[in-house]
Image (cartoon, rainbow, N blue to C red; front, side):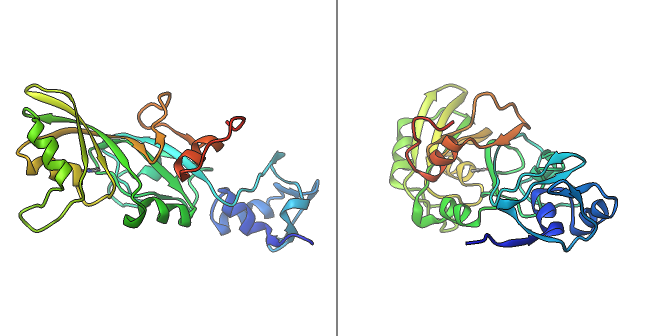
Amino acid sequence: MQGKKIRMDKFLAHIGYGSRSEVQKMIKQKRVKLNEKVIYKPDTDFVIEESIVTVDGKQAIYQEFYYYVLNKPQGVITATEDVRHETVLDLLSLIDRRKSLAPVGRLDKDTEGLLILTNDGKLTHELLSPKKHVDKVYYAKVSGMITLEDVEQFEQGIVLNDGTKYRPAKLEIISIGHTSEIYVTLSEGKFHQVKRMVMAVGKEVTYLKRIKMGALELPEDLKLGEYRALTASELKLLKGEKPDAQAV
Ligand code: URA
C-alpha cells in the first residue's frame, strides 16, 4: 500500500524549517530538492517513505513526534510564548523550536530541572493525568529543621487551610540543619505543590529542582539550560515500558 502524501510546505514546517510562509519562500528560492530535483511549488506532494528531501543540500528527516529533555534553569517560564519573559521554548535552537512542541506540565519560574518537551499529546496526557499516578521526584532545600513528624504528615496527605487536599507523598530527609535537604515524591502536580506542602509543615522551600519523572532521571550530563532529544531507551523509561537491552 502506498504511504500517505504530504505537501512540501507542510512537511518542512513540521520538521522545523519555519512557518508555512517562511518555507514557501525557501522553496521559491530553489533551496529545496525532492529526489535530487529542485521543486518550485510549495504544494508539491509526495510520499515521505519513498522520497528524499534536501534543503540547501542537507537531508530533511521527518519524524512525527519529537521528545526533548531540558534541564530548566531559573528565570525561564514554562510556557510556549510570552511577550515579557524568556520561555523554555526560547532555549531551543530555531530548527528544534517547532510550533507543535509544548512542555509536559509546569515548573515554577524559580524551579530548575527535568522538563520534557514534546508534540505527542497522548503521552503528555498520560504523564499528567491524575489517574495515571506518574511519580515526579524533587530535590529541595528548605529553611528550617525538617522532622520525622513532617515525613508522617506528608505520608498521611496534607490538607491546606484553604481546603486544598494533597495525596499522600513521600518525604525523604537527606540532611537536617538550619537548611535541610529533602526529596519529595508526588503523584500529582498541583500549583506550587512542593512549596505549599512544605509551607504547611512550617518551613520554606529555598531551592527546588525536579530530578525524576516516572522512571526517567534528569541526565547527569545535561547542564542547566541545556536540552537534547530523548534516546529510545529514555523514552521507554518515560513511557513506563521496559527498556530493551540493545536500545540506546
Ligand atoms: N512544586 C512547586 O512548588 N513548584 C514547582 O515548580 C514544582 C512542584
